[in-house]
Image 1 (cartoon, rainbow, N blue to C red):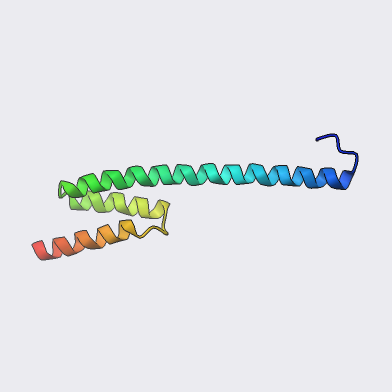
Image 2: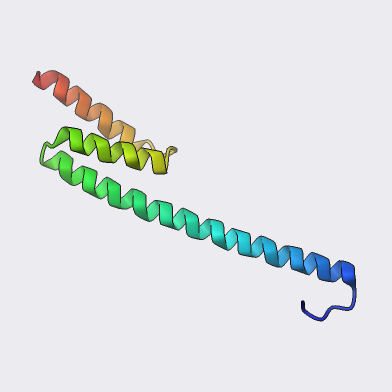
Length: 88
């Protein structure tokens, strides 16, 4: 409470404070997801470079679940599947 005498104004201020807190929480959640995604991609890329294909696919799939809007994991999975197809 900021000591505003007008109850309607105070209610609006309280509402704005709540919205700001929610925005901060969402921003922190997004940052946490991005950090986890980046770590998984880094691990998957390393596995791919070692030609550990199934393990790489597993990591890309987890990354894909965290940020499904990202196309990179699926592109890498398809690339691995094509590579495995030609190797068999």
